[in-house]
Length: 406
Image (cartoon, rainbow, N blue to C red; front, side):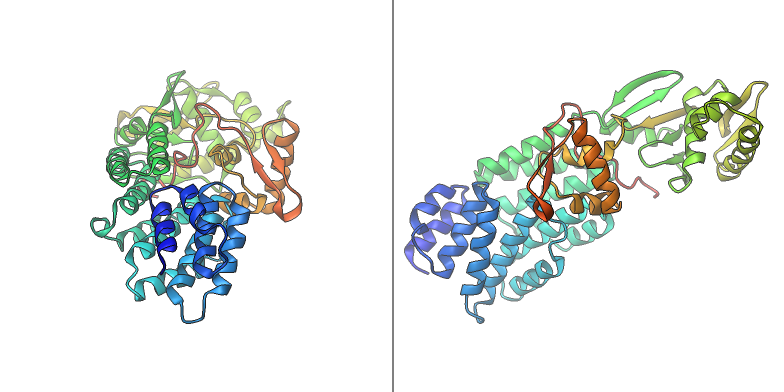
């Protein structure tokens, strides 16, 4: 490798893309194309970067396995930043295996961290943890250690392990300072700031207030009966009952939980759970059936008792009942939470991350665009959606993931 290529590579490694471009901007050999692509990616011109990396991959010879694999990893990172979640994950896995086989442990670790970040975006926490467990951060350079600890923090936060998340972010900050890369330091600082954003609202005995991640973790271990509107579960420290596929039952549980220790009149339950404006005898019959189903579903956690006016929750062992609600509740709040990370998303990537159909997501985006809450640009498959970050709104980093026991 010649001196200019070496100098450009060192400049990129230190977060100085302009210096790298100064050395290779007029060259069209494969190493220069690859370095130019990475530099353009660091400067934010992702489409140009992607084109240059693909040219570099084609230009490298068939025997230059490591160089081609590095280009694939760089292209995968661009796809992740662009939220192109349909980018072939198998190609990244094959590139990582090639790098590992040839002893390039730093770039192989980077590829594995990209795999973890993608898994976190689509909510596959178990796979993300297993992938991270295969890495030894002590053997990595500072920049890679910072990336590793950011991934560890992402998993911990989604598991609602606030203390472990803060510890990982502290290690990430230390590694980022050692690396001396301003963009990496800014990324860590942004993640730390998000830890101080309310992650949910606590509703108890008629009062409501925002709660941080640490408070949620303490709440779930407190012995209270928690009606969790973030995950649509009802839980105590020992048992979890999921009502995610039974929306009417969860709606009844939440209404009763918000009213505890009082009761809720039958007419109110019918109106709020069934959406009936003028309840009739058929609604009252349906309410009796659904309350019976709710009793059966929650019998190990709480009794649902009839009162003179309606129904009330009677938790076992004298526990208090609290409701944990999302920080902001409005139409398409989950979609807005993903867009709040400041990146541009395609509708297909949002559908994959949300586990919804593309048509459903597109309808939601159209409605939000009409309301002025999101902005779309581009046409056809290249169309992207974005929204300015909203103060106090959690990005996907703080959206509740699988709770302990799920």
